[in-house]
Image (cartoon, rainbow, N blue to C red; front, side, top):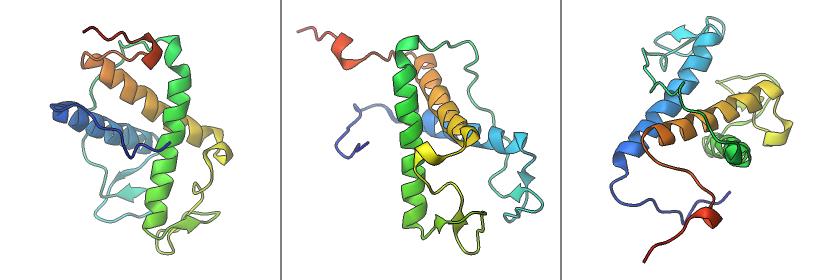
Length: 151
């Protein structure tokens, strides 16, 4: 999905900052559930990373996403993966069956459709939590065809 020409309205700094923090918090919660903890350097054997600090994501448990967002969730999940993969490739990473930070190999550098169910679910959770955060902040999400413009 090419978002090159998408512009957000002025005054959205608070929303963008909250979305960035929430995405990182979701990542950190997932790593914590896998046993990762803070460490001064990344160590895959000890499950340590310097990116693990105390996080407090916005509580969105009470937000229910309407069914009309299901297709958007999947599109966002795929885009989350594609942006991540593109960034990694620009940093010199390539596909490898096992993750190896020194060699810059990563097993998830494959098309979204080839990811494991767990990896796709991780990307979907990122999309869901992002949409929930947007709604909690008072925004509504409707397909363009449903938006009426009043003059």
